[in-house]
Image (cartoon, rainbow, N blue to C red; front, side, top):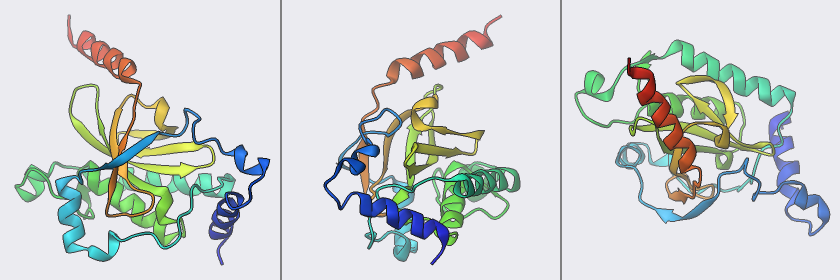
Length: 212
């Protein structure tokens, strides 16, 4: 069994014991994005699941979060940097002549393709599927975007093709709309993002920067 799987298992067992140890991970902490009810599935992901049903199934083991250490942190950094460097950003319109098409990138792709590639690389490295969550966000410009939200004991970390840094979700300038369910990779839940003032301020700054 790999070191990362052992770490995830140890973390998961903490939640099975009714003791103060389990309170060490506070999901009400701002570093964790609060989720709500089941919601609609993005059309691109729905079509992806139709073509690859085995990648959109209920997670047999629901690991709440990965216990992050230096090795796993380095792995996150490496995978994020690798795909940000290897994949050329191109829209679905230009690549496939459709508005929305989620797939694994072949040297080029849009934001969802980066996310799928990073998620697959982390799954191959042994990370639990329940901690690797595709999230849909709105940028300060109003445009939609997708990122990979990785649930760790340090918070929900965001792997983004537009930023080489890995930040907690609450440190990013995006407004979070929804993400995959931790229990089922084929279902999505609402995200309750109360930081709309931050996004609004970012939008104002972006508009101001374009004015003489």
